[in-house]
Image (tube, rainbow, N blue to C red):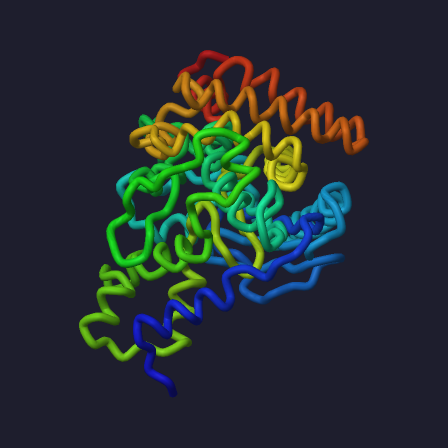
Length: 373
């Protein structure tokens, strides 16, 4: 059993952070918030992927990495239908929102055990520069993350009452910076390239591996202290301890060999398809990536942006402007790629219903709670 030093922990994380690959494969995981809270505990194979229980309250349908967005959507649809039949047999209802029990001041671990979201897995990207380079994708994923969290906010209630937040789930992240900090210090504001040419056409100012290592080492462990602090004060931690800590982290953007993007709350019905499409196209389509970067690069300097995304969603004018540009870029990418009319219409309907009206799905829940509909 090897005891880790801080340097060895960093090297372990760097070695596993990114497996370079050409963007194209897409993985989708959809959480199911259950009532009552008694998810089946045995892992079940589905037609393509698996059904797991993250907690008694949350089950997860994970489809395998698939060659392209539309294949990933079809496979996930198949598996969600199968998972719904399993829940029906157990007398469980799948709720159409992200949480209704978590307190906005609650413990961070509630994000993983009592809230439901949609996670998208994409290839890490390529070595070198350009819009599909690893560092470029890391920066872009972080700058679009609060924008998409605001657009897909869908957790405004606790025990049936408004909380003052559009997403209690994202409120648990309200203190996050847009971009994670450098190793060895509290997260500073890092310089983000000022324009698309600098940000996507030359070497970026942020190294993705360094930023990821800093995030993991500085994130609190179950003891409340950071891994870095524990290592520096003589804690005898092993690779197993590090991997367990890593598995429990739920940042908006994670480096798990691939990019894992966890920014969208659970959507009602088949609404999970829209965040999957938007996230994938903004990261994997080079032109859409440039357009999204142009719309969001400046957000790294915005104060308290995750708090604003969780509380105000698209009533915040800065987030609303960025969201309109990002959704337009995503639709353009789907059109260029020849995506199905059904998918393009779903994105267009969401954009018209919510984004263009500075609304999000949480506003529908709030309207119903207030008797406005």
